Length: 309
Image (spheres, rainbow, N blue to C red):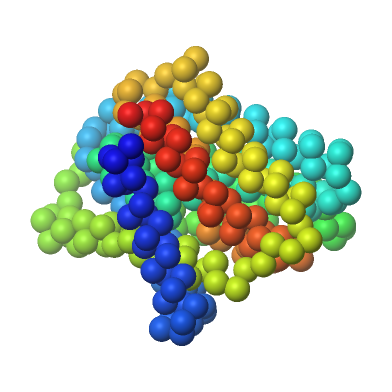
C-alpha cells in the first residue's frame, strides 16, 4: 500500500498546490488557461514526438492496444449515451457530452504523470496510443452528437466537415503525425534539438497537474447530482472495468502496456471538458462533472495501481 500512496499522493498534492495557488490569489484562474495552452500546444506535443522516436515505429505502435482500448471506450460511450438520451430528459447535446466525459480520459494531464511514476517510459508510448483513439474516435463522435442536439439547422455533412477541420488544427494529432513520420524514416534528431524536446516534454507532467487544481477553484455541483453521477460512474467504474475486460481478452504485445491501459482508463475526463461544453451551454454541468470525477479519481487510480501491482 505504501508504494501505491507514493505514486498517487504526489499527484494529488500537486493538484492541491494548484488549487491553493488560485484560491488564495497567488495566481488568477485565467492564468490556468495560459499554462494549459503551453502544455497542450508545446510540452505535450514534444512528449509525443519523444515517445515515438525512442524505438522503431513497428515496436512502438501496438494494434491490439489500439483496437482493445477503442472497443472498450466506444462501448462505455454508447452505454452512457443511450442511458442519458433515453432514460433522462437531459437532451441530445448533454447526452453527447455525458458520453464523451465517461469515455475519454485526462490522458496527458493526469494519466501520463501517474503512469510515468508507475511504469516509466512505457507511459509515453501508451499516451500516444490513447491520443490516437480519443482524438480520432471518441472526441469527434461526442462533439458530433452534441452538435446535432443544438438544432442549428446544420446537415450531417456540415457537422462532419467542421469536426474534421478542428482535427486538422489539433497540435496533438500533428505531433503524432510528425513523430510517426520521423520514426518511420529512422530520423535521429540533432543533439541540441533532442535536448530541447526532452526539456519541453519533462515540463508537461507537473504543470498539467498544477493546472487541474487551479481550474477546479470556484466550481459548484448544486442541483446536477443525477447527471454528474452518471458521468462519474461511467468514467471511474465502467471505463476501467471495460478496458480491463478487453485487455484480458485481447492483450497488448507488451504486458506493461496492459497495465498502462488500466491506469489511463481510471483517471477523470479531459481538463478542457468545461470548455467543450461551453459551446452547448453546458459549461456548468461539465465543470461540476470534472470536479466530482477528479476528486473521486483518487480512489479509482489507487485501485488501478493496486490491481497492477
